[in-house]
Image 1 (cartoon, helix red, strand yellow):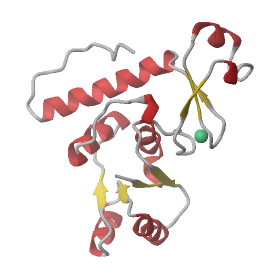
Image 2 (cartoon, rainbow, N blue to C red; image 1 turned 180 degrees about the horizontal axis):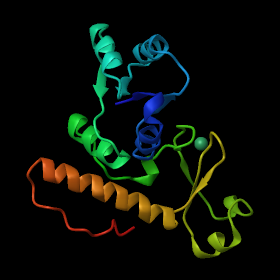
Image 3 (cartoon, protein in one colour; image 1 turned 60 degrees about the vertical axis):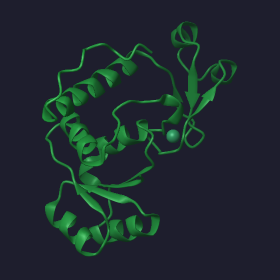
Amino acid sequence: MNFAVDGMLGKLARWLRMLGYDTKYFNNMDDDGILKAASEDGRIILTRDYQFYRKANVQGVRAILVEGETHIERLANLSMQLNISLEINIDESRCPKCNTRIRRASKEEVTGRVPETTYKIYNEFWVCPGCGQVYWKGSHWRKINNTLNQARQIVAGKKGLPKLSQQSSGQ
Ligand SMILES: [Zn+2]
């Protein structure tokens, strides 16, 4: 599944990239431009705009109306509509900034490109070949997993499943 995300869902686009989905974000494009691009690439359009959602479906381009007010609720909603797994495998992740698939990097490779304390503490790094951004599983990583955990709880609740345990991903 590949996605075309409209201007209202930029944050969701970043999450989908982290989850490994090829996601184009159209910040300043009109509906027809997004429709054309999505149709050419075979992308599913994600939008909060009901009129745009209907227009896409009338034109035969698959679109999903994303519900929820917070990005956690939106992730849960999308997971239920498209059966998306809310687990990040960082080796499959794309750069949240530019959508390029990130790759593992050796410690030597990131020398001088991360803060000194980070370099000392962490041994696993990933880099984006597109924009050069370096990633590691720092404190931000825990927040990411907490967010996904909350989204999974919502999904479990809506499906009537027992609540999942609150354990972190153990990475
Ligand atoms: Zn990048």
